[in-house]
Structure formats: C-alpha cells, structure tokens
Image 1 (cartoon, rainbow, N blue to C red):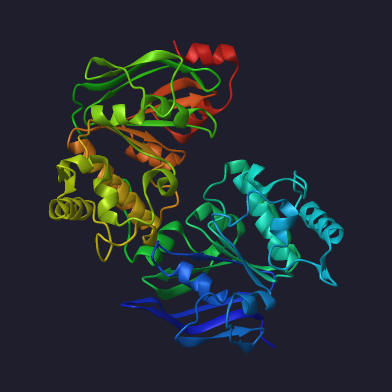
Image 2 (cartoon, rainbow, N blue to C red):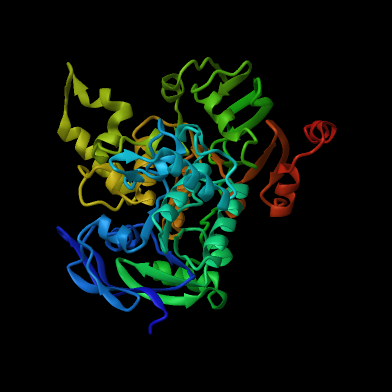
Length: 504
C-alpha cells in the first residue's frame, strides 16, 4: 500500500508552440504540507490545472491512493477530493458566505434548496477555522484573508482531502499570514494533504515538510525543507547562483528633483517632509497601515492632501489629478499592477504606449508602425519575455507583467519614478532583474522613490531610508547605518511624545 495520496509520473502538457509541463514528477503524502516552488513560468499554474481536471495532459499518469486516475473535467477532480484555493478568490461579492461556500454543490432535497441545513454546515466550518465573521455576511464586505478562509471552507464542504493553496499569503499582512499558517497546521492535523505554492521562503520553512522545485516546465527535485538552504533552493529554482541579488552601484547624487513639505491628509498622514535627488533611490517603509501608499497617492494626484506643498526641481506644483503628475514627469508604478497598472486583455504594445498615445497619432489616426516599434524597443530594453507585443498582458507571469509596467513608465517623459511594492508576487529570478532595472534608472539620473515592506529589498537597494509609523515619518537612516533592527525600532508603534522627538 502506497503512502502517497497523489502521484504524478512523467506528466507533459502541450499548448501550441510550448511545453507547459515537460515530464514532471510529484508525490504527496497523507497529512503532508508539500511546497511547490519555481520562478514564474516554471509550470506551477499548469500543474494545478492538470490535477484539478481543467487541463488534460498529453503524456504521463496521475495516481490517487496508488490507483490510476483519469479526470475528464473539474467535477471528476472534485469528486476525487481535490480542491484549489487561488491567490485571487473567485467569489461572488453580492452573495452571502453560505451561498459562496455551497456554490455549485448546494444541498437540495426534492428540488428545494436546504438553506437552514446549509447555514448550519457553513457555521460549523467557519467555527472550525476560527472565523470572525458570520455565514450570513456578504462576501464583498470581507477582507482578502477572510475571503480565502471562505474558499478553504468551500473546499472542506466538498470533503476535500487534497487542498491546493496558490500563493495564499501574497496579499496578506503578517498577522493574516500567521492566521493562515494556523489553519494549514489544523488541516494537516486533520490528515488533509496540502500543496502550498508560494514565492516566499518563510512560508515554505514555516509550513512544509518537503519542497518540490520546477524550472522551465521541468521537474528539478524534491527536498526535505529542514535539509535545504536558501542558496541551494535559489540555485534549483533559477539554475544559477544569485550571489548579488541587489545590484546596487554607487551613483553620485545629483541635484534635488522632488521636495515634499508638510504634506498632510486628515486620518491618513501628517506633516510629511522629505527630499529626493537625481540618481538616488530613496526607500520608504513601515508596517502595513503606516500610510506609505496614501502619501504616494497624494503626491500623484490620486487623492487630495489637506495641506502641504510639492516641489519639482524647485518649482511648486499644483497637482489636481494623476494626469497633472504624469505631465510633470512624476510616474507611479502601482502596487496592484493587474488592477491599476495594466489592461490585462490588451496587448503588451498598446499597454506600453497608452500614456503617450498622442505622440503616435496625427489628425486622430494612430501611426501603428511607429507605435509598435517604440513598444518593441522599450519591452526589449527591460528584457520582457513574450512571444509578441500583441500578446495580452494577462498571459504573462507576474515578473514580466511588472516589466511591462516599467516599459510603460519609460514611454513617458520621466523625472521621478515611484515604485510601490515593485516585486510583490514576483519570483527570486525576476526580482534580481527588476532590481537591475531600478539601478539602471538611477544611473540615468531619475529620482526613485521605493515603497516596500520587504526588509532585504529596502536595505539592499536604498541610498537613504525613511520610516513611517502611524501616518508620520518616525525616522531617517543612511544606507550605512540602516539595519533591520533600527528600521523596526522606528516602524513599531511609539508614544506620541517619542514620535515627535524622532522628527526633530
């Protein structure tokens, strides 16, 4: 009798012109948390779709409890006890939690939906997960973490014994991630097997018994998590050593390009003042909710500050809307690239040229040849991996989508580049490439404001670091003096008196 509840042998999935999976292997034991890691484009998403019955492999075999399985579709996989919880929950925001949990497998007796029974079962599942909301709550009113909890409850309601969690912590705060870890520990104790897909090493080391690595659609190896080091894992994932993940070069700081004076917005931030110079990477960090993104939104005209001034090259600006900031050369790469940075259904080229479309048109007619040549050149400059500039942006990996956002910024006349969480949800190889692009932009004399929650990123790329706490700047550190401890000391909540003292 095999110990494996799930096993894949030599599975290959072919799409026109590409092998999305190439002879991959994988096995999962009962009650095990098994991490699956690899760069974007390594084949992880296709792997999920094959074992959940969305795609059928051309070659290879899938075994459940030692017996060969043949899924004709998602219903077959669900009936076999396999469920997936995705990074972006596919929920119905206007419906209740109960309706979302039982969508597609409602309890029906003699043609009548058993609402009382369904609500009772939903309440039972939520109680098991220690949920702090009710089954009658509207899904759209829940946080991302709570919506993921509903998706896990939905999986459990189908009697799932194998649950796939796809990048579940990517959009969660540290506290929310800890709550998810608790839920996964509970699933493991209940002998549910979990496949945990993540870019974050801390997720893997905290939860997983073993880790399997895919690279370039191929199986690289399976390792015990307590026996593999970060450097070994990186080498397995990218096929090379990343000795210098942060390619920071010393650049002579140029003149002041941006100055913020006593910028305030009631309820969000107060008296924010700082300077940014040409060729400088200025880090802005703090705990989630400190007010970093809100400050940036006011600088870029997304929201309106109540007080304060913005100066560009010594000239006071009056920014009423984002177009005003863009016209002046202040460009924002937003945190949520999919919702705010790209139109996913559009081709890469049109995404890149969209901000400056007037440059390619005459008398209302777009010169498509000029537009395409410009987009192609910019996409190549940031080394975007795609077949064509006409590929939809939504078809690319997270790292390559971020490169398209950078190319889009380069299509404009820039002076200040604001990067809000530029490597969020991006694998380690793509991170190194984005840091290289960031360094290249600084060399060209752009002033870069880097907003990040990742401590290694802030320490590795910043020339100076500003720390926010409770809507205020609580400290400034030079690159030489900055440490994780000193940043956290400023970022942690202080008394009003302490915060005021640190600002003087």
